[in-house]
Image 1 (tube, rainbow, N blue to C red):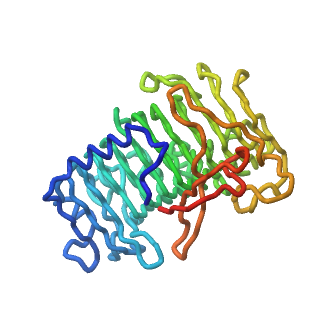
Image 2 (image 1 turned 90 degrees about the horizontal axis):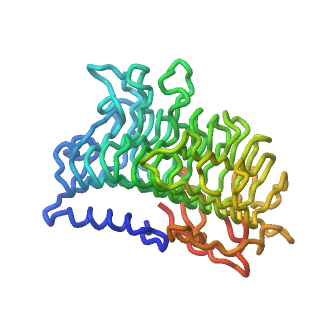
Amino acid sequence: MNITRTNALACFSAVIAAASLAVSASATTWNVGPTRTLKTPCQAIAIAAAGDTIMIDYSPSNAPSVGYYDDTCAWTTDNLTLIGVLDSSGARPVLNCAGLTDTRKTGHLANHKAIWDPEGSNTVVENLEFENATLNNADGANGAGIRIDGSNLTILNCYFHNNQDGILESNVAGSNIVIKNSEFFQNGVSDPRLKAGFGQTHNLYIGHCASLMFEYNLTHDANVGHLLKSRAAVNYILYNRITGENGTDSYEIDLPNGGTSYVVGNEIQQGPNTGNSTIISYLEEGTNANNPGHDLYVVNNTIVNQLGSGTFVVAASPALPVLLENNIFYGAGTITSQTNASQVTNFSVLSNPSLFVDFNNYNYMLSSTAGSPPVDSGTQPGTSSEGFSLVPVWQYVQETNSAGNVECEQSRTTVNIIDIGAYELGGGGSTTCG
């Protein structure tokens, strides 16, 4: 994983540096697995000290007594790194909680919240799969793969699916959340009998923290809730695939309390089964003291609406004029509800699937069709009022292996004049995967 990015800000560098300094020379690496002395991750977590690393051997965990089935825990230890060891096909070790009964005495998620509930700071989680975390109405019906009760969490190359929430963050002031090269699929509550979670659970839900860095991820096919919801004070939503597809999700991106937010270089699709006709929603729940910024930048995205109606970007008062620059808006609908939005060199089209390499499979790379209108038709984005460069330098790439999807980033270089949309025709460079 390449963790050096020209667009990373100082706050993330400071978090990583602080975590590194906290690791002592005596830090221990623990090995976990069915053939090891420590059989499950939670056994190792219980004895690990600050700065330790836990290496988790591959196990499918698809039935009781196999691998890491129903192994849940919370911890207060700081600076833990938990890494799954991939099998030969690239599959991640699986934490499966399908067998838990969610009772107060036995058989429940950690703290009645999640498979993992890190309460310490500076946790890193890599190469792991989280599935089937559920709670009943009495416990809120919002069981999560990971519930973030501590500060500063980094997620790398993980897969969250069929949980009530993929990730749920608990409004930890000052916390920075980093999520990269990960997949979120069919999280949410679709059963209206679980009224405490119905419509309130999402593929991932970030609360009032300092920042969210969300890069090179695939979030798709959510159940009723949103593909991405964040109340962070600053949001970096960069180079992802955010696609409703055949799911019943509501908003594709929901930023209900605003915050300074960058939506750059993403491919975003609203499917025909969505429960809400808005694609990107900003400030619909009003202002919050934790989010002083009211500025939204939507730059070089490809946004596809297959519902047949609705609004691509809704920004409620008192949002500053939204910058909409170099975006492809594909399908019927209103571009924005904001009358004073700044709209610069966008391209709108009702229907022309030949623009893209594989429209039906959500590959919105520009095709080589002669005379493609988005090619060489953009303007060079500048910087935000905070000094963040809006120029796209990466683009999302979807690869697969025998284990499933692989979320990757590909460098983007402008050819002649910058293209409109999330991809540069002929401008893709080297690819790095999670």
